[in-house]
Image (cartoon, rainbow, N blue to C red; front, side, top):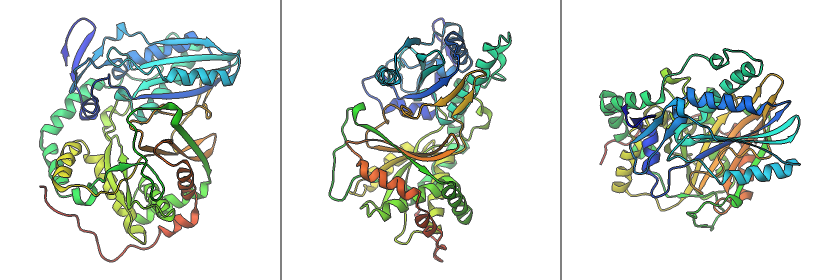
Length: 455
């Protein structure tokens, strides 16, 4: 890292961050992720402010700033200078509080100056508060959320009880995110990077002929993808699903020698088939974190790699294995993929037919409820839209998650691009045991050979 003016250090951005910065022109890069909770009990707002500030000092990615013109580098602000925006207000009822919270989403994050986190606490009653914690995606990913909120709960309990060592309650100091960027670039420039680029040269025709992106739309519909976000068009659907569905998915994964994640993707594809959707597949935005040394570090480690997933006319185990192969390759070797795939698409051309673009996450084992001592923190299911606006309006975000012991299939989407009725029916297909069991058809005897060669 290069030290600049007082209080700032410059570091080379890892591929995950650089790809996001390169995709933005003009305005400051910002992909805010908002977590909304209900705090039940005598919440101490001043204690929460201390804890949030300490976590920003603890994790350098939260102190990141991206000056104008920065495409492959960023700044880390000094921990002693961090000031987390924190606001406490009072509303008379839950409806007014949630309306104020939604209005607050419009403010976003000041990524030019940092920090990448801010918090709003809305007091509804003496023992009821709404909490909105906004963190920008350029320094935060899904697994970071599990780390961050676990540490928040531990530190809050210790600070509220008067423990003088509360700053250490979150555990050992993690590896700095800025060091990850330096280590990753060395990896990409070495033998592993060369090997990964060689791997993708022989796999593009198998996983990478990404068609034009489109929303989930009915036959004959061609809704244009708007360029401007519109929060009023954002919709969320949550459908309860049974434990027998999860058991069927796990059984299917075992049969296919694949992961449950891949089985869920195959189930989504099967759902599209059963709905009679004209698309031959979907583009799945695959994410994964495989860096063990940074397992307790908050930052943007997962790297979205689009994989074109398809099913045969009679979908079965072979198709699940094919989806598994594509997703596994994207997770383990995605870093050099985006630049190479852009070159490949330019040379090969793309199918004319637009297909849905799905961001899928299996969160069945994630925690969303936390014990803060005499305060309990639980996801506010009314206003929980994890990201106030998807990265692009055509993205259909689908999650399988657990809240209060109940499994849900949820979808978040822009209704100007995705048909709400079709989205609801697609979630219903995920809960259809008979459809899932048809995916257990034995594999074909003929194996699918990957196409060889790069252009």
